[in-house]
Image (cartoon, rainbow, N blue to C red; front, top):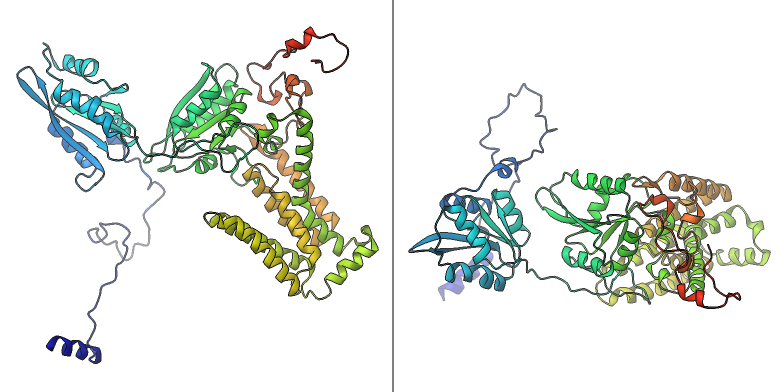
Length: 573
């Protein structure tokens, strides 16, 4: 009873709240211990060299013969026991009539426990009755050659080598009395299986896409290119993340200077963490301010294999399902992998539709503004009256009306991508219909403008490359402003400036406008605007300067020589 009375009393009684000290994020944990600077000294410490290499001592540290020192070093490195996912297992190895202490270190969740138990711990703990004479070297060799059946075992003399292997899903084995350690590859983390590509879907062709595991991705490429000359060169990017990357090229085809340049850029990336290939693309490209993509990002192994076979390079990164291909030209960004798998006559129609969609997406809104504001005489009189009649109740100028609808369309597109599941496409369709109809009914936009925005949006979806689509979306707004300022004159100036931007943009020394500027030999280019028949694609692109220009003989269909030459399809130069 007293408890309820006290509760009721607390409801109607005011009590002074206890002062609570708010948390303040200091610059560093030792601010209170550092001496105060002279109040008259207005100079500030120089932060230009604040970024230092803190791992230099760790790189030089060598493994000790004493297991206690090794154990102490690894516990300090991995913050044991604070780290909850690091496993430290101590055990004994039998040597004649005595035991040698040892321990193994690995990350839980990144390794295969069955492999560790059956191929490492069980042989060392149960089958390690070593009966040999000699010193520590013989013991180390015996452990490596006779006791550890693991297929990948590295002998390391430095802590850094073992730590790198542990961080990448391996394990480290330390034995007392031996100044080396064993690093075993026991990767076993959960990963996504090989599925269909999400951003580059095609009707005909391979349906496999890259995953987030580096070795699965390189294996997908090797499954297509069964060539011993295919080189997979490994790199590590990021001082702390130590992200594994692989450079793929064909040794006797790709230009050696191109390989050396890509290798130089990968080796000279000095950052702490690298998370995705999108960050790697920005670190490798020459100009970060150019709107033209300088590398091609693709999640299709067949697309990567085709570019490598033609003399290009590819960079695959662990943790990202997208590979980077370089060098790349503007014309190649308009091509889809499906173009190589369908018949020659069909490709022309598909590419014509694609180029038309790009032109509509880029120029249609600007041309509409230019015609309605400056060049009404270029359209039929009845159409002019219809446009003016539809805009009679609209209170905004045509450029404001168009920009409003374009921004709404971009918002619908972005929202459709961010909403998970099947709601995204539904939102795009319903949102566009409802907003468009409501905008016309409320006299915010005219019906002809809704058609213009819809056709522009549909044309933008015809661009096969995601990055190139962003490029033309930015240019589209520029043409809208230029068309509103000075009509066709502004659009002409915009086309001229855009052409200059394309011409001056380069990808690893290759101009983005080739093979048109600078002009290359038609006999050495596999294709230009339209694709050549596959039996005419005898040479690799001239601008790549590959070691081997020809990729197939002049007569690739030898069976056709058995037919009488009475017209029809013949292999001609």
